[in-house]
Figure: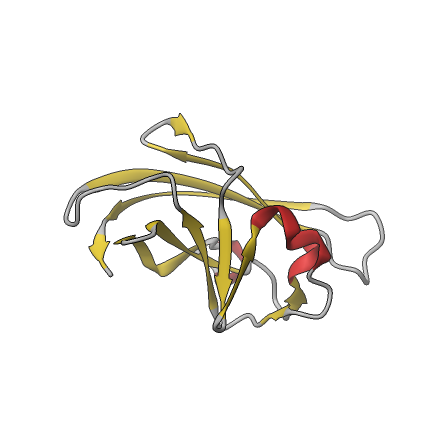
Length: 128
């Protein structure tokens, strides 16, 4: 899979005190503001995950997923992972789960474009 096609990061899925944390990669060839990246849908083991309380963690900052469209001055660099924090979910370290994530990218310099980027992977939960 080419880097611009991958949306699940190498760090995978981790169990934390604050819920599950899923690594995400920017499926684009250059850095973009978070405001042009839409996260969802997400399924784990075939079940849709409610993202209403989800948060994004990146470079020492954390914000509600619902506020992502306002993050015009926070750039996601192509070589970095961002993390989708899922406070209402938990899983045992060492357990394996099929994770499907879709990211939508709308680069500001290509008017009207909305690229869909799905990926499904089986991930083993790490302890964070």
